Image 1 (tube, helix red, strand yellow):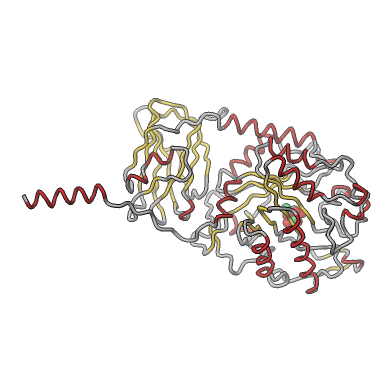
Image 2 (cartoon, protein in one colour; image 1 turned 180 degrees about the horizontal axis):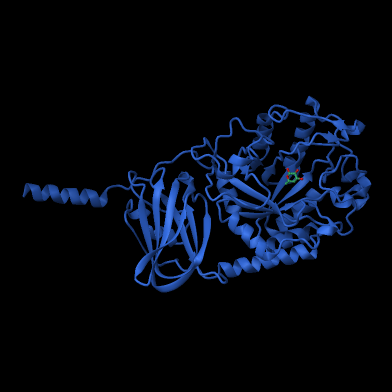
Length: 480
Ligand code: FUL
């Protein structure tokens, strides 16, 4: 009798053991970074005097009078971005030439001295209104290198730079991302000196104090540079993220413009900070509009490749679409962007996993069931108990079904964990190996040759702590 009682007690305890939420693993994302991950795809707008001089890097001696777009319409940019499926726009408020697209009170090198809108215009203000109208977020690029400024290279310039940053961060509503470019070429106009000025990237800009200004004025914004602090460069401008991609980085000794391109793709597995990667790439060969490149706009198919090598590899995609001399996105670019959106819609039209039966070799308890991976709710996830870092999960499709894409997401609020996984398909009565992978993170999407499968198995082979998977989607995409 006694042993019966203690056995019942044990069973009851096991059944009703309070489920503990998994503890965090390594560096974690901030709320702003989590919101940033969900942005996924947004537009970069390179526009300035270069658009009119046919250059990529303006020297800084341009007359402001050359800035005179004949039909500038930020609403067209926003409409195109929205129709293309983008969630925001980041604009070059000032590129290396130092020319400002807003009437900064700290310089004469701006559109206030141009014939455009009789010098009374403000591109940033118009973009703000357009973004609000179309429900897009807005970000700013403010080049640290300034080839126009007479004081560039001295301490005075840092105050100048910060004053401009303050203008941008106080007068134009909520900013979601501030973009710090690492490029520092040396020669420039510099108020007429026309010389080469070298600065020490590590110390000159006194980044920690500039970062503080952004934190104070726009606490919800993330800051991008080669070295974060919040979002890192992916290390190339070709649109290619790394298959192994940790959202973590040891950035303490890093700085914008440093020699880090090689490590930026993968990040650091045990990095001290959460600093995910952003892919920046242009729809054209150059960053600015050049008539000779009107025929060289990337095709929808090429953009789809870039989608898989960026968003499909745990990166956000910042796609540059430079307005022309009218101040409009050129017809060829619009066509390509919308064509790409059409391809995307077709690619992901048939989701096959939602609501299907899911089982797992192990799970943590009722709140962390395997069915959390296909319930469409990003806040629920499947978890194993703490000591288990190797487990498998099977989605039962009910009948043999054609599949050729898999999308996986970790519950990154508690850190990025998975180091190695594989996918198998149950086809023709046996399990066949489909693909191997390393990291997952916020999201990955992998292509594989079409397979007719009745079940799909995801094997977590190695994980830094118990795996937490919030989402799995399966698709049958056209083509292939
Ligand atoms: C680079 C710049 O030098 C290019 O002109 C462009 O703005 C690109 C996004 O970043 O470092």
